[in-house]
Image (cartoon, helix red, strand yellow):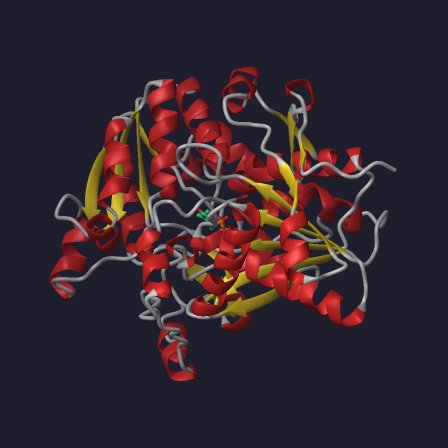
Length: 456
Ligand SMILES: *Cc1c(COP(=O)(O)O)cnc(C)c1O
C-alpha cells in the first residue's frame, strides 16, 4: 500500500449530511434533568422557556440514531469544514515510536476551535423559530467567539457574559467578538439579580463559568424573543459535534485505519464525544472490541477522576436544571489554570454515564506537563495547540511512548480541538518557568462536595 498522506481530506460531497446521536445506541440513558426548585424531572415545557424548541427535542432524543443536518447549515459548515485528519509523522519520528498517531484538527476557523460546529447549529434553529436575540456565557472566549460569528452570519443579536478575569486578561478575544457584533458584559455584573447577589457576597470576585451561566440564563428568561445557548455539556451540543468523529472515521476508512486508542480533552465533554461517538457506536453494538477511549482533564479541575457521581446544579446561581454527573460541586472554583475551557465543575451527563459504566477512561494531567507536550507537538507538527487541546496531546504522547517501550504499533487518534493563538500569556508563563501546578487537596474538594444538593 502507498504511504498514508500527511493530511487526509474529505471532499465537500463526502461531508456528513446527518449528525450521529450516540444516545440512541447507549444501553442505558443518563438520569433525567431535575427542576432546580422542585427536584422533579424537567419537562419539555420547562426547557422551552430557556432553549429553542428544536434544540429541546434534540436534547431529549434518545431514539433517532441519525438526525439530518439542515441544508443551510451544511452550507455554513462548508466554509470551514471538512477539517483535516493529519498523520503526525514528524511527532512519531521525534518520539521514536512505532505507534501511528493521527489527529483531527478543529482550529482552522477564526473562533479557533470546534465550538463553531454547535454555535452555528444553535443559532440556525433559533433563527428558524423567530428568536431575535441570544445570551450566553464564555470563559476563555472560544465559545463566545464562535457564537458571535454564527450570530453575525444568521443575523441575531448576541449578549455574552464573559467571566471577568478572562475579560480583563483577554482583551483580544473581546475585540474579536465585538468585531462580529456581540455585546460583551463582564460577569458577575449588575445587570442581573444573580450577578448583583454574587457581587454583594464576593465583591471584587473575578467570576466563574457557573456564575456567568446563571446571569445569561436569567437575562434570557427576562428578555422578549430571547433564548439562552450553551457551548458544551448538553446532549444537543454533543450531537452537533459528532461531525468531528464522522469525518474522522470516513477519512481513516480511506486509508484503511481504525484507531486502537482515541483521546480527547474533556471540559464539558463536547469535543471528546464529538470525536469518539461514531467509534463508540461500534463498541456499543459489538462490531468492535478493545477500542480504548480516554478523557483527559486538568489535575486542577478533576471532575471525572476525583469528582462525585451525583445530582448537581449546572451553575453557581442555581437557576439551571440539575443533572446527574461527575461533579466537584457547583461552588467549586478551580485555581487559575490556563486551560479556561476545562475549568467547569461538572461533566456532560452522557459522558458521566459512559464513564460510570466503564466505557471511557479518564486521566488527569498537570499543567506544566501539558505545556511540555504542547511545545514538543508544536515544534514537530507546526501547529500551536490550544492549552485545552494540549491535554489530549499530552496523553497521546504518553501512549505513544508506552508503545516505544512495548514495541506495539498501535493506532492513536486524538482530538486537536483548537489553536493556542489567544493563549500566548500561558505559553510565555510556561517558557519563563513561572507556571505552577496547583492540585486541589482532598479538603479543598470536600468543600465543593458539601454544597451538593440533597436529592433523594
Ligand atoms: C471549550 C474547549 C474545550 C473543552 O470543551 P469540551 O466541551 O469539553 O469540548 C476543549 N478545547 C478547546 C479548544 C475548547 O475551546
